[in-house]
Each structure stands twice: as structure tokens, then as C-alpha cells.
Length: 64
Image 1 (tube, rainbow, N blue to C red):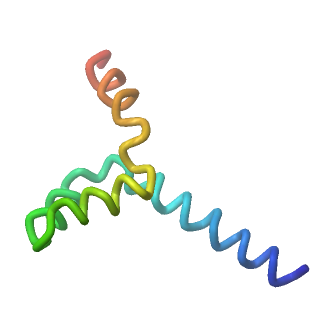
Image 2: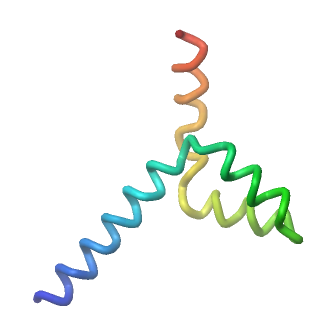
């Protein structure tokens, strides 16, 4: 039971880390420019769900 709880906490922590990185476009473009295979880097970020709310972010920025 303790192992399952620790694994679950690790997943939650990683998800929170990804959420915090979601709007860090500078890091994304830095990694993208240094990557040999651009598609793989984009797929990695997409797989993390980092583009999931980009539309909401753009709308919020335009409202300011």
C-alpha cells in the first residue's frame, strides 16, 4: 500500500511539474532548436499535455 501511495505521489508531482512548464515557451524553443529531430521534441511536449490548454492561454493573454 505504501509503495502504491509513493508511486501515485510521484505521478502527481510529475504532472504538476509539467503544468508549471506549460507556459515556458523559452525552454521549449531552446530545446527545439538544439534537437536533431524537431518532430520528436514536439511529440515529447505534446505527450506531456503541454499544448492542451494553449488556446485558453492565448485567449487570456488577449483579454489583458
